[in-house]
Length: 107
Image (cartoon, rainbow, N blue to C red; front, side):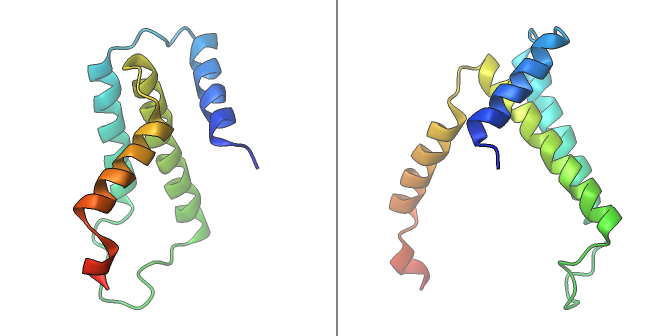
């Protein structure tokens, strides 16, 4: 299984090979949202009151996986342009949220 760093390096190399490296942060942020919306479309009109609400046909699951990948691909490119260490940002945010939302308050 590849590491996150390997996946990130592959995304950045793919973009460099195509000269897609000077996209504006605004365009990349918009693309993250657009792709997230495409992911959300798979759940539109979902009846969340049914017991099988988490189950999707294999074709849907493949499309859901692809849309989720698109979100991450654009987010990786955005973070590179903005000099954000995504993994460190996640760790920092989890620490922040742990203080803001102590686990014992949600037992």
